[in-house]
Structure formats: C-alpha cells, structure tokens
Image (cartoon, rainbow, N blue to C red; front, side, top):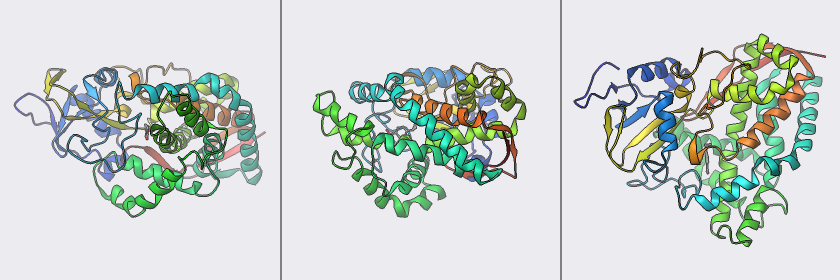
Length: 401
Ligand code: 8QM
C-alpha cells in the first residue's frame, strides 16, 4: 500500500479475496482505510473504499453508484451474469421500486408481528432441546444454523424436501460476488442442480397458500408487480434469507461466548437483545463487501473514478473505522451501533433486516433466560467465503439455570 499512480490514488497489490485475507481481513482493512479514502486494487483493476464516510456516501448515492451492473466483481455491462439478475439487489430505480415496495410490506415490522409469538416459542423449544442434550455444543450448527432453518423456510412456505440445498446455494451465491477463485470453483459442480431446485421452489404451485411466497404472488394478482417478476422475488428470499441470518446469529453468539461481561449485561437487561444483535452485525459484518459501479466520472476524496468502474465497498472496514466509531474493535452492547452499514444503507438497505432482528431477538431471549454463563469450549473455526464473514464451528460450554 505504498506505491502511487499518477492520479495520486494509493495502489494495493493485495488480493482481498485471498484465502489468507478472508481468514482474518482486519489488518488488511485497517491498511485500506489508512491508505486513503479510495484505493486502487491492481490485482482486479477495481477501486475500493474502506472508510465509513465514503462507503456511506457511495451507498446512499444510487444514481452515481449503480447496482444494476451487478454488485459483484463481474460487470454486467460487459459480462453475462451467472443467473438472471435479482430484481432487488441487482436493479436500480425505476425497475427496483415495485419489487422493493412489495417485499418491504411483506417483511415489514407490522407484518412480522404475526410471526413473533410462534418464533419466540420455536426458539424456546430449540434452546430447551439443545440444553437438554448437554452443556457443550457447537453454537453454529445447533443454534445459528438450526434456528433460521427451523423458522424461515416455513415462513416463506416452501416444501420440506430439499431444504438442505439452501445453505450450499447461498454459499455459492455469496462466493460468486467475488472473483472466480478456488471458492467459486469448489461450488461450480453443483450450481446447475442447486439453481434448478431453488427456481422450482419459486413457482406459485410449489408454495404453501400462506407465507411470504404466496404473498408475493398475491401482489402479482393485484398488479403491484408482474407475474414474470413474482418468482424472481421469491428467489431473493431464498437467496438472501438464510446464510445471512445464520452468520448474523453465529456472530452474536461468538461475540457473547468471548465476552462474558457482555452476557452479564444482557442477562441484567434482556431488552438489550436487539441492540446486541445490531452491535454484532457492526462488529462482525456478516456481509463484508459489495461492489457498486460508477454511472459517470465521479470524484471521491480527490480521486477521479471513471464511468463504468467497479468499486469494492468494504462494509466490514467501514463498521470498524476509528474515524467513525469509538473503540471500533470492542463488542459493546451498551454502545449505539445505529448507522452501521452492515445492512447496507440507502435504497438497497437490507429489506429483510426486521426478519433478521426478530430471529435474533427470539433466539437471544430464549437463551438469556436459560443460560447463566457461556464460554468458548475450543477454538472457533472460520468457513471461508468471498463475501460472508462466516463460521464453520463455534464450540461453547454453558451453565444453564
Ligand atoms: C445479499 O437475490 C437477491 O435478491 C439477493 C441476494 C443476496 C443478497 C441480497 C439480495 C445482501 C444479502
């Protein structure tokens, strides 16, 4: 991070998708922030932003930094996407508006009130089951993955059969936002099979009569979206709704396992569950990065980014930028994490964030009334992904009431 091109943009030769960096991206992200507001990554011929101020500004400027050219490395202006583009993630106004409005309503706080009681009960049943089986367990498989898989596919209204495909599909999808490296190659053999299964779940006939999926199709009946759009919007739920929440829950459980004082605070005030989850999303940033594409020549922090160029937005780096956050590396449930960009910012900000928060509230609430202390029971193991900050395993030991 020491050489400078003629336009005074700092250049980095580091591969942010290298397995060594993905294992622990924090030192590289600090270098990136310190190098300047915009850095050129010569390995991929793209620009990058790691500071909160510029990441936030770019995310809220959808006119200047579009999503419709794809939010991965691949530039849809020149390359064919590996799947039909998402009507939400990979679209901008005006095309983005109707799908977004429909989904915002279906996944909004008011609509979710109907699920609240049953999700709280499901979380209690799951936690009871896990605690009865023993005091040492893997918080990822037994809780962070088990809970979303227990409640979310039912809420969408898909069949029982094939649900084991959801996590591998998501894993590949999130890898595919990065370069074609070993992680993408590892997923490639199953892409056709997994995509075919996911797409088959999105038809009206495959979905239960109630649920988010049916409500999307009902929006087509009303003319709020077209019938052609409905299955792709269902696909967005199945794409973005599982791996993200699994890793968000894994993040908050890992955070508490390593911070017994913070667990004490949560036990003293269970109402902190929601803030604690957002703090974990800030601290860990389950979605680490997304690209945008410039729609014109844009100057950022004294650097001219030409039209049509990819910029890698480091949500994770922005969420730990000391220019914005006090003690950014500290997980602190008493901090105000609002304004973090872990759910993005602006018109594309996570439409499912209320679902994620409800899942975490249900799980943490069930845990906090039953578990006095939680501590690591062995080394946690990362699962590497080009976009997600993910855990394979977080062994914990608990003392329950
Ligand atoms: C990431 O398919 C989609 O619409 C979609 C896929 C992935 C995400 C969002 C939307 C951000 C969580």
